Length: 411
Image (cartoon, rainbow, N blue to C red; front, side, top):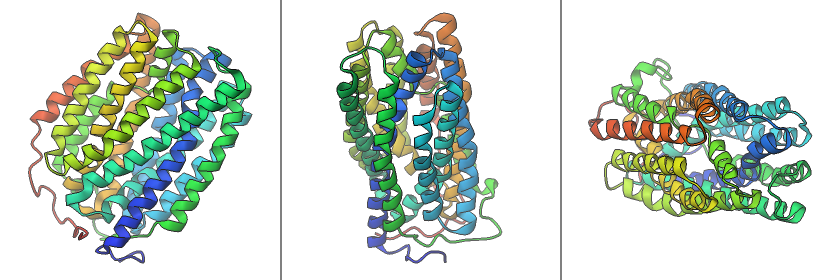
């Protein structure tokens, strides 16, 4: 048994929940100070077109996603989750200064790629560490709490960016290059703290290793593969959120207005995630996910018809409900339907497939925007989300469908 903690140690499980959540909280403060300003910097300062912004976002997410399955498989084979996650967070923190010195879209793309590679390394081991630490009956709550901490950090990061923008340039419509670089430098502090918290506070929980099957995709089971295919339909219409930012900008929202919308989104996300996760411990998780996808379909359709900045403000808040209901719940569902000793591989496969689809989704959205207008990508995304929700509602995962699952942690 790897690691230094007994998987049946409840205190160790709660410690990991707090450590992982605190790390995500701090890293999202850092990331959200920067990430939502990148499309504004590219479009307003560097004059980059929507199609190219979609390409930059899509390549960054998709390239990094290829690492998620590799990292997840390594995590299962080595029986370690913590230090792979620490390495990923460390790389993302180290990439932040690259944004500050970037003066071209290529340099921004390279910095974005390095940051996402860090995410690709950390995501699957982190989610597997959390799933290994918490018993099934509280898994929805745990993932919901983690997402709440993540989105609360994002909200604080956006509020910090709002304050910095206001102090540096007031209510100007376009983002200034100097303001962007000041915010990047400030974002380094929570990024470094995030790495330190995970390295010092988290504990391995003794993932079991079986040399003859760890990392074999066929053992993930048919229910997981079907769920992955359904989620892929949804993600094909789920282009980078940069397009929501560009949509708000196209309707006349200022930089401060856009950041305020994003803060409201994360507030709603944080408030919804934990109770939604707890609810998924009492009702079928797929019901909650399908409901979230239906909400997404309605929101995206309305974004397509929006005609004023306040429309986007309302829809951004509603968008937080979708995330709170579906995002953490999907990860709890994956832990339910795959063997415990293949969770790293499962989370990696899920993140990789979903992330790789971000590239065609973003390219399609950019092409639809430039060719047919800003309403087109959102109407298309809403239609695909509706199709995925119907498919998920018809899906019957069954019970005990995977074989050889490892023992669950006790309370």
